[in-house]
Length: 255
Image 1: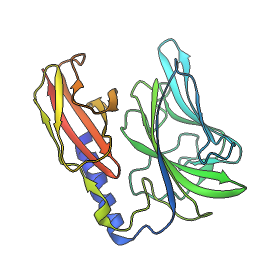
Image 2 (image 1 turned 135 degrees about the vertical axis):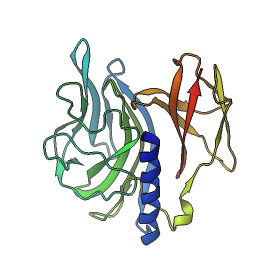
Image 3 (image 1 turned 45 degrees about the horizontal axis):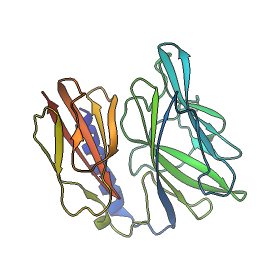
């Protein structure tokens, strides 16, 4: 079901991009930050203007429960469709349109089942960023573990034009031909200790994340020659790889 959902998201994203060209000036960059209770909170200045915009943190609620949250700083805000402090996830290609809220927001929590990011894989949080007294729309791609004890911050993008539109995951793309799915093979599959990818036409570093079928994040990193999966329990897993504006999703089995 998770693989089917990801595939549908990518399909509709391609349809959206077919209908319009992205001519706005979008600044994007990799964050590659993991936030846990042991790492402490992570604060980010989106446009490096010496004014912090957001803090991501894990708050222990009890010895066995946590909350993953984000705090808007200054006049920056997040897109909060729910209006109850539990912002909804955005998929690739969704419009960042508001409404927006300030202060504390819960991405995922073990109490009451609140939070839409928990165990949902890579999703987008809409941003309304204050830059030199003006508002700029943006996004950040994140993952929240099913146990709400880990937030992975992947990439950020924002429109350099004040109050100009942006869609989740949008970069300075000129046409649909700039979007591609990664066609790759995993071998051996089923596997025992190591897996490798059959990849072609990729020039940059390939990032990967491995989750179980509940959406719980297990492993992530940058692919080199292989991935050691010897610590995984026997079962079926979903691996997502990304490189630039390309993404690929596969299932594999660990014996």
